[in-house]
Picture 1: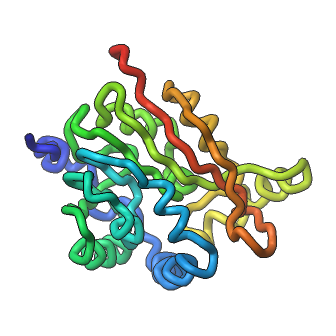
Picture 2 (picture 1 turned 180 degrees about the vertical axis):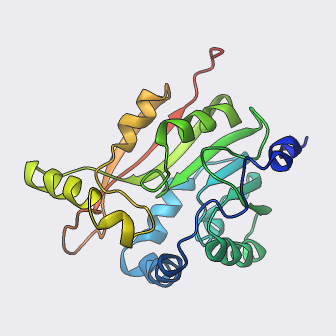
Picture 3 (picture 1 turned 30 degrees about the vertical axis):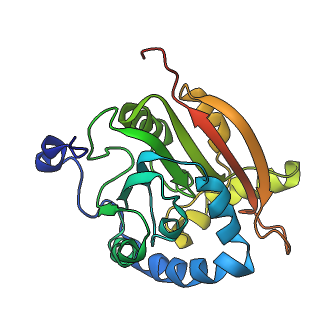
Length: 231
């Protein structure tokens, strides 16, 4: 069964470099590797992906640090990454993965794959930076089979009123400019609920687990499902 959609790729609707943040990409590539142990991200990735099986699409794969954590029951991962440098690093990570991984250029708002082709979708620190969250989640619904699951680890709004005001001020000023389009005051759990997904348990996680509380520290780790009823 073909998972890609040749028509989407040929139409030009999915540019090869939908995102271009070369300086941030280099910074992220360095800091994310050290965060695996120093910030406990390796353990978070294990919890995020545990128990997955079948065909999986990962949206915003970055430099591919999730790939080593996919369980053997996963038959294939299609990893979407729009930023060129991170995509190149993801290809290198895919060669070392224990499951088949195909790294593909594309944007979250226009995924170059067929509808209802996947058993699971993985969202890992990506909803903070997509340009159009409702449209991206609409694409998640489209490519996920009815009853399929969404595994997510996302950061967003949190803390008290003062922190929320700080987060909103950062989003309106410097934060997206220096952080590759990232926003810290979005509500990823609310966005999933608003897109029609059925939410399972959500665990609140602080990153770093031990250390200073930052505007980007408030994370949510959980599972959601596309309803089985036709939509």
